Length: 134
Image (tube, rainbow, N blue to C red; front, top):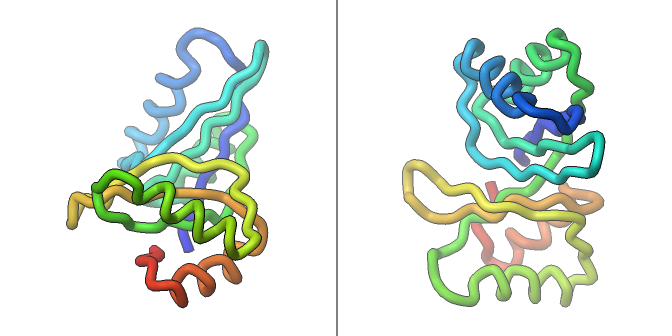
């Protein structure tokens, strides 16, 4: 199971740079990220090399953060693989709240990172159907 850091941040100039600067100071690598914004605040979701350390550093800097379990599924870099994964989830009656892309630095393969309810059960389901779950 992967841990994601969700950061609630004011939507203003320089915020992302401040967050990435904090991670840089802590020597934390960003492995995957997605940002959802609104007029005043946004949610930055990141899979990082040291999630607990990132959480502590960002919280200390005044950001509201949360650690969340997410699932990473390594897929081949081929047309239709995301559709195949989503179809498998749909057939298993699993709803995906959101997803984003990362990649395995060792194999070079894409990793689909997603959030859903009961991540442990979903992980077992996908492993049973032959998917490579991180």
